[in-house]
Amino acid sequence: MSDITQTAHQIVSAPHDYLHDTTLFAAAWATMKAARGQGFDPQRLRPQHLICCPAPAPEPLDQTLTRVGETVRGYAARQGYKLPHRRAA
Image 1: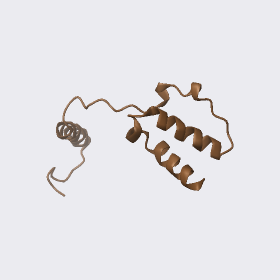
Image 2: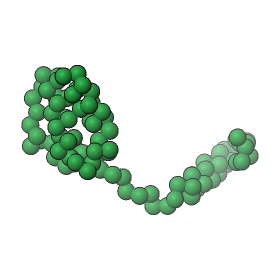
Image 3: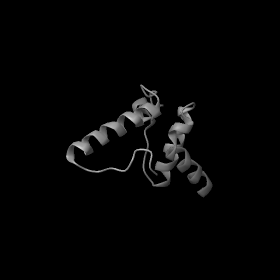
Image 4: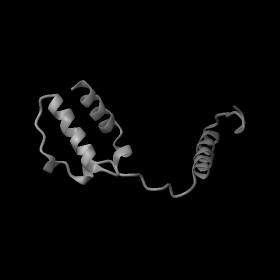
């Protein structure tokens, strides 16, 4: 029983890895609930309770980090903070 509970815990802990088979996630959820002595009604587990794959970023990550860094540096400069050179570190 411990092995089944551990496997169910792994599935429930990382649902994004099991999006291809939502019935596997539902079964793991039911196993976790049963291990705690709780009831489970699969009709109440609707798709919005499952984690969906995130949408792609509107711009590449490098551009986002550069834009955010420039914004933060602009605010800091207006407040009079002296920041290290942006290429430092």
